[in-house]
Length: 135
Image 1 (spheres, rainbow, N blue to C red):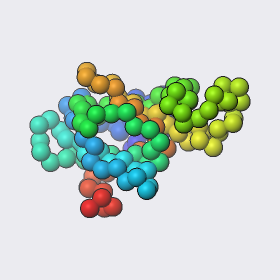
Image 2 (cartoon, one colour; image 1 turned 180 degrees about the horizontal axis):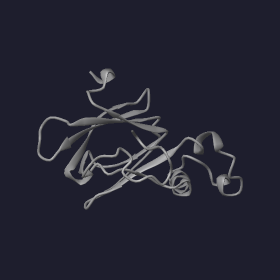
Image 3 (tube, helix red, strand yellow; image 1 turned 45 degrees about the vertical axis):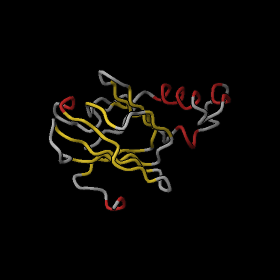
Image 4 (tube, rainbow, N blue to C red; image 1 turned 45 degrees about the horizontal axis):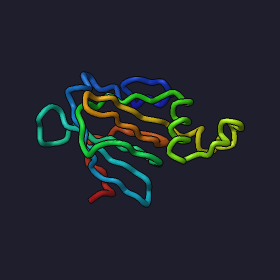
């Protein structure tokens, strides 16, 4: 089961997530969906896929080591949204001004030895097979 609470660690409950590597598989821009293929060790076939829905922001290389995603606290997500222009500075004076966005946005993040991955999306899902709408 995928964790959804802010502050959650190892969101996808993967045993030994640092033994996996992720790769951007597909981005469906009309639906704002990001698919990652996740490989165990040096295997060439994905072990599973991860889907992020309603993606508003992505900061990541095309591939990286580890699948240990966490969900940041709400304030960290809002700070990044303000920094990159997804919400205006009014959010600091009127916290509910962007409630329609900030109530649903999650900052999924992963810190590997070589990079920091940050994805702002409304939800994430664990998929066993390739996504049907990417073929």
